[in-house]
Every structure is written in C-alpha cells, then in structure tokens.
Image (cartoon, one colour):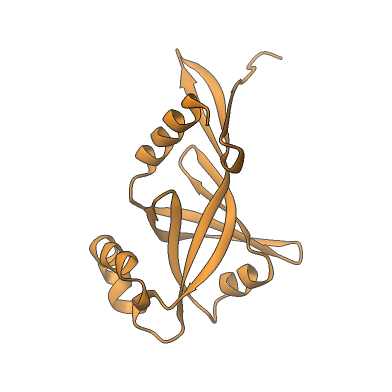
Length: 153
C-alpha cells in the first residue's frame, strides 16, 4: 500500500467524520435520482437506513452502484442490504445518538432496511498553496493520484 494513499485517505475520513448528512445518488434504467440521507461512517464504510417501499430501495436492488457527495468529496461504491436496522446494534447506537428524530420515527418500522456502501473510488477537490488539485483514490488498488487542475486556457 502506498504510504501517501493511507495518509490522504485518513484525511478524507477525518473531514467526513463518523456521521453526516450526505447526498445519495442512485439510478435505474437510465434514470438518476438523488436525495440527502443521514449516514453513519464506520471502518471506511457508509451506512444508512431506508424504507423498502421507497424508490431508492428499488433503484439499489436493480443497480447497486451508487454515488455520494458531501462538500468537496465525491464517492462511488457498491451498496449492500444488511437487513433490519435494529438487528445491527453498533449502527443503531450511533444512529440514535446522532439522528434521534429519524431513529424514533423510522428505525423500528418493519419496512426499514439497513444498507452499507463500500467505496470503490473517492475524489476530492482540494488546494495546495492556493492552487486547485484533484485527489483521486482507487480503493481496491490502494492507489492515490494527485492532479493539478489547469486553470489557464
């Protein structure tokens, strides 16, 4: 593993934190939709719950490639259904702590499902000495690329 890869990836996760409201994009049959969701972040994975009657649930069941966007960070990954949220104690402890009203309203509903996103690719726009750069992380290859963004035409 590249030493810079892990260092920079740790910076990304520090910037995001252990919970956040993040835009989740899904697609099915060439139709894309996006919505802001409450996420718990743990061990490099992103967890959220949703109702199995919702559009995003059906989108994910048909196409489990999803994207996330938070501030200057974009994430692409694979989404997997884990079961009912209340069956996952670590998720529930954090979800209740950070998103209490959502926990109270939805987590105990029979139709709720927990999902996990495993990132495959992360991109962050950043600045070094005031100059824009694009940082790219290819997670499975443990590869980090830093590109200067050319602002001159």
